[in-house]
Length: 286
Image (cartoon, rainbow, N blue to C red):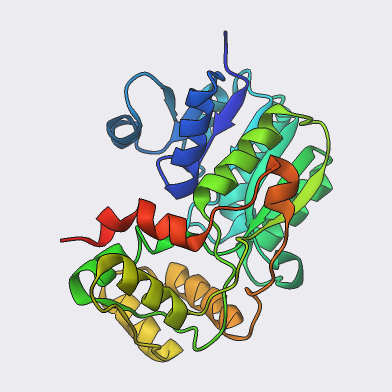
């Protein structure tokens, strides 16, 4: 059976989890990846993986052929939506994509600065069916992006202050994404996906300390110190500025809202932070 579902953003946190769920449910799909060799190494050889580069229109025909439903993840390095993202979305719709499930951000409707807002507006203007997954900060950021820092230095260095964040497990995002891609996909929805509690990073560090039986500190750096450290580590300026802006909004209290959309869609509570910490404790162990 030819796949009608295309997954982008794999092997990233959410994309790889969407792949896992689709495999578990024996649903045919295709993965679009810029580096197909790396994708096969991480996802396995038993998956249809086709080269796809937002910046290379020559990859559009093969990747979108036969596809009706698209799981769209914005590559972090691409921030110019009109130049770098729009051509691929327009090509997908022209070739027959009927629904786009877009991994967006919590509060994006009130934040026109971030690229996700512009992508949402573009999808809405196109007339294609859509599902917006406006997700809070991923718990798995701590087990991937911040993993080395926690494991090797025993600290979390993010410029959020005492603000709370309604962290969500990417396994819940993936489960909602697969439901959107396979059930009632001709309907339009905007979901705000959060966990069931809001925590500040002092509480997060305490929880990780308890699970790991050693002290994990939250250093609460300034935004300027965070920017300097990110740039010094080799991060690109555009990416760093977008991340710093998101953490600044969090510091202002924009990430503390708790919703029940996960439970509404899946019929079960969202995964707790405590369960996440236990499940991923190996990521922070030497």
